Amino acid sequence: MLRSVEFALRGAGASRSFAFSSAAPERKVAILGAAGGIGQPLALLMKLNPLVSRLSLHDIAGTSGVAADVSHINTPAQVAGFVGEDQLGEALKDADVVIIPAGVPRKPGMTRDDLFNINAGIVNSLCTAIAKHCPHALVNMISNPVNSTVPIAAEVFKKAGTYDEKKLFGVTTLDLVRAKTFYAGKTGLPVSDVNVPVVGGHAGITILPLFSQRTQDGGTEVVEAKAGKGSATLSMAHSKFCNMQLMSECTFMCSLTIFIVFIIKIVKLGRNGVEEVLELGSLSEYEKQGNLRGSTQFCICVQIHRLYGVCQS
Ligand code: NAD
Ligand code: LMR
Image: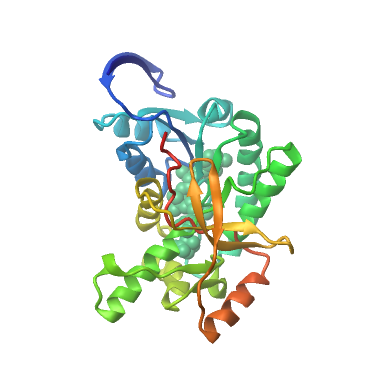
């Protein structure tokens, strides 16, 4: 089907119309922090995703170039760049999925908690805008410390009366990606055959891979290897890409427990969020203790393994 669409590139002040052929579902995705280390590869991967029909790229600066660049890729998603607080509402308008890598990354010697003061404020204001402009969107929090930014988002949404625990996710899929890679490397198994559930949280000992411990230090390994030039960005963006691409019934995500603890759970996701919380399966004694330890920390929210159908019409 051929249809005419308006292409608007904010910031560059350019606007033009063109026709394209698409049978893609109408799924609108907004990335906040889109000009950053994670945001840019994530924008690329979202543009490649055939399930995305509109891609809004927002940041405090630099989205004009990213949007222009990504928009030239010959896939159906319509791309627009948005800059600053003034254009945030427009970027978020009617979004089905919002992804938030906005904030600062850590440098060697820092913990994720050291980012709290600055990133908490950023997340607070972005979530306030989400509650206003796309209150029903699935919100995927990447900004660290995820263990704390997700509860902040939850509080903002509760205050605005838009909170839905089935639609708020702290994205720690990166731990799954790492666990699979490290386990396959250690055992010599083909990585495509390896599945390592990771539960708990996304900081140090709260990360509980059910077969491996190495995942717990994966982030620090990248921060040190980049020597002050950022933390994981490419593998992180890939992790998100997997979420949007793969159709699976098994997915990791968090839920709110009766103790108001955010913790990673294994869930089945649908296009409206969590459909079912799944059992963890049998755990070794070590893993049982680790799970208890992770659960008692006021920590995380989600571990999306595969985001089943979120962008599916
Ligand atoms: P980055 O500094 O490269 O990019 C962050 C972007 O956010 C920048 O472009 C910045 O301009 C933008 N930004 C800042 N304030 C903003 C605001 N108010 N509105 C919109 N955009 C804003 O950092 P990065 O490497 O992309 O990492 C981003 C965050 O993701 C960090 O907090 C990092 O620790 C976290 N992270 C999380 C995971 C995870 O598994 N959850 C993995 C890697 C990194
Ligand atoms: C990671 O695990 O790579 C991210 O949380 C970034 C970091 O600071 O380690």
